[in-house]
Image 1 (tube, rainbow, N blue to C red):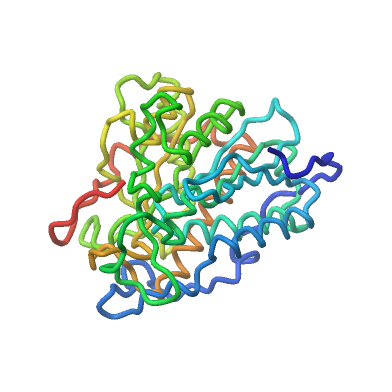
Image 2 (cartoon, helix red, strand yellow):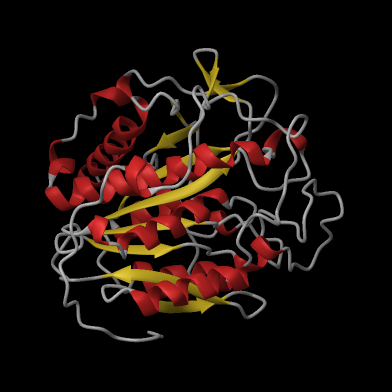
Length: 354
């Protein structure tokens, strides 16, 4: 269901450097120094609620000629699931940015909302004529609001709500992607039937959060990345996925605050980055940012003082990706860095959480 249709009548210029377009200030040496739950409060009140996110998206939709806001389906509890889309030419390469399959992983959503706002400013002209962009900023709205059919009494965050990994039925949406769509949870079914199967998507970045203790080379990571690892992924899809990872890595590696590792993830087609690559030949990248917005396990949740660099890391990732796709430089991206990118380990027994 499209909320409104518009004709793209403006040409938007290339995204400016993030230092000019984001208000997030970065302390020196921020990466690895953000507080854990032991030395920083976990606040949910500073995050967008579902209602405030909806209002934000509708405001941007009214302001931006290039943007269309689409409802792709509903959650278990009946909340509309929104997608912001920028399609100037169906023949352009298309990228999907997906956040909050897991409802307690919200800082990537905050970054995605800032990115959407930037797309409507004069600082972003030139990009949208060469690339189509789809942004789903909160797939798991019920989990994000803690409106679920099970108790969250043992969750850690302060504020006006808890956030949980699962949807209202206590199902992990990022384990649904190998099912027939009629057997999927409503949120995953909407993603497949009304996005994956409807749009000709070339690339997807699936944005998540992991725990706080992952490290490489003795230094806590700001995030970790991984391409699809299922054996049924076509070689050309895998190669483009690795190129996508190269763009992201090189955008963050030299910032001084970004420290990126290689994620250690599963090979199952039920996982989003694998399922989308196998079923739809979409070149995918998983990005696991450091720390979650809420959890019942203390080492997974991160204090709010780390929010700034993680939001900026999200914006930088999205910005660099659309630039590289728009100007075609992604096609010549060097994938050899994957051969030496260290796999992350943990400072204590913390399980992978993709």
